[in-house]
Structure formats: structure tokens, C-alpha cells
Length: 141
Image (tube, rainbow, N blue to C red; front, side, top):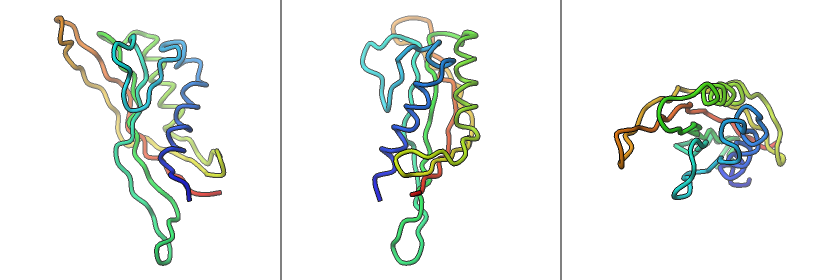
């Protein structure tokens, strides 16, 4: 079996980049793990949080169950475009069922929402982190 995490990252990126409601808010600023230093806001950030494998007889891995955080980070309170992008992200990953990519089957469900603010170091402003944590199910076709 391949490293499913790398396949999942590609699957997530491709779905986000193809969603016009997402790209209308963030353009091409969709990043895995960490945004580049000085990246313009808003942007989408997704990263692997944890996961487990399901094994069959002996040591054969049948599927993997990674958890990914997918969120929009914006300056200040979310605008209507940010809210639309976050809602689109949720619709993309809340109930994605049996989509095939690179000989693997992907599905996902949201485990919990994410929304919190982070103070901006150089001013009295803040960033908003807004999205969710999504559990993927990945197995070979």
C-alpha cells in the first residue's frame, strides 16, 4: 500500500482548489501544514492531526482513518465570502462518500467544528480560524 496521508493531502488540495466558493475567497492561497511566511490573508490551511489503521488478518492494513484539520484563516471577523468558503469546505468534506483517486477510495465526515481567534502580535487586531476537523476513510480500490 502507498502512504495514504500523502494521497489524502492531494485529494484534499484538489477538492479545495476546484471549489469556486473557496477560491473566490482565498484565490490560490491553499496551504498544507503551514502557510509561507508573509502569506496574504485570507488563506486555507489544512494539516494532518492524527490517525489509525484498521488491520485484517495478521499485519495486512485494510484501511487508514486519518483526521485532518481544514480551516480558513482571516484577519478580523469572517466576511460573507469567508463564511461562504467555510460552508463550502464543510459541504465538500462533511459527507464525501466513496470518491476514487489514484486507485484508492476516499470518504470523509466532520468530527467537530473549529472556530477560535488568535491575537495579532503587532497590533490590537486578531485572526479568526474557522473550519472543522474531518475524519477520512481511505482504502485501496
